[in-house]
Image 1 (cartoon, one colour):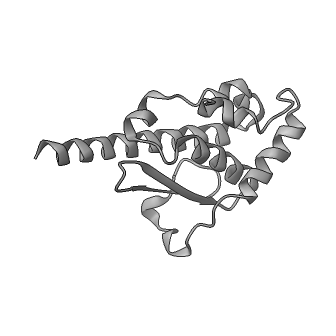
Image 2 (cartoon, one colour):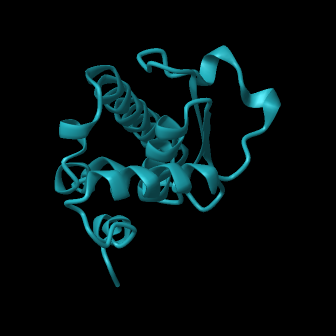
Image 3 (cartoon, helix red, strand yellow):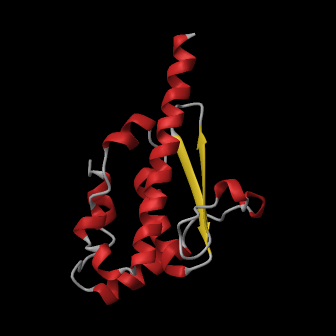
Length: 144
């Protein structure tokens, strides 16, 4: 079975072509699962992003984190799609130990504006925060 990083990289047959990568990222964003309008709330908003970005995290009965999100900007929505694909439907402890190496492999920070890079980091930080909270929640359930 391929690692999540390798699964993500399979989207990019020619990783050196930023023009092609940009198109792929935008197309992935267009395929992102529809985000419920009622979830466009302040509590799900990632504030460090250049354009509005919402990320909702749920913890299902199987002990896995389910992520959904939305952005109004095409490139941001595509980056969100990649991050969701990497992290969703995983246990919190797996989220905390598995790093999104595809970001470095694709040299994303070389091709994104500093604001988008900061927004991507804020998105990743928020996912880590959710995973830590859900891990504590699950540990408390088992401790009782």
